[in-house]
Structures are given as C-alpha cells and as structure tokens.
Image 1 (cartoon, one colour):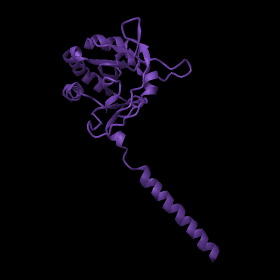
Image 2: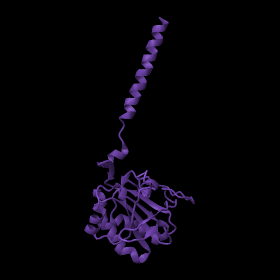
Image 3: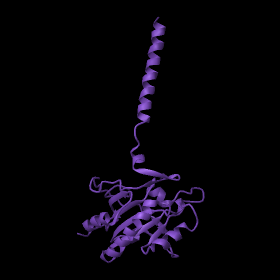
Length: 213
C-alpha cells in the first residue's frame, strides 16, 4: 500500500513538472513579436528601443549599453583602398548604422540616413554605415545597393574574423542578432542611444540635436 502511494506521488510530481514546462515553453517570444524572419536572419521592422527609457551606464569600458564606449574596430571602407577605425571619428557625433542589402527596413531607412548626413555633416555629425558583408547573400549585392541609393557617407565593410570563423568582426563585437541596428555615439565615442529596428529622419534628428546642445 505504501509502495503504491509512493508511485502515485512520483507520477503526480512528473505530471505537474511537465505541465509547468508546457506552459513556460509556450509563452510568447517578445523578440519574435517584433521581428519577421528573412532567411536565417531576423529583420526588425520597427524601432524596438524606448529612446529615453534605458538608464545611462557611465563606465570607462567598451560595451553595448548607454554610456559605455562603443566597441572599436578597424575595417576597410567601401569604395576605397584604405582602412579606418571607429575611433577615428572621436571628437564628433556618430550615427552608426548596421545594414545588409537584402533587409527591407534597411532599404526603407537609407534615404533618411542620407538626408541626415546631408543636413548635419557640417555640424560635426558623421553618419557612418557598416555593411554586414558576411551576411550578404550574393556577390555584387552591396555594390548594387550603394549605387541604387547613391550612398555618399562612409561605410565600413565587415570582415570574417578568420578563415575558420566566418562570423563577422562587427557581427561578433556588436552581438548582431537582428538588423537594422543603429547606435548614436557622442563626441567621446560613448553610446548615447542604441536602437534596434528601422529609424527615420525625425527620430535621429531629435536625438542628434540633444547632443549638439
């Protein structure tokens, strides 16, 4: 009798544990709600950050939180034979945009980024792109994109970490799981605002003006 009660108790525990697992496993994925699949990568269609909501973390170290120094890197510049580092832009505001040619919201926001560059480049503001080249799907796609949109601001070209690890340098440093992504950096190279998702001119203009005050 005692043995049967013990077995029943074990069965009850297993049933309860399984029920909890099923409930938790079927909770909605917040990231999935704001993204749509594009191949094996995610595309963020709308801005996911609350611009004034995240606290500023003032630390003298590199990281991806507000107030931290944006991770530095050195990469080739599209359309030239030179390399530059992100730190080369220190002393001026930087609007750093990560994009790929196949990404619909990346394409949607590019005219606004170009407009921002034209309006603010004489005020100490640099719009700087990073083509996520290791995520591109065909040769020539980046060139077609640059020509189609007549992009004039500088664009880094992400490179594979090495021959054994084809993950991009920026893709790794910035923990890229979805694109587009935009980081507004202050004159010291600290992250003022990180934005996951599509941006527009008015949004960027508003944040840039705060840094220019």
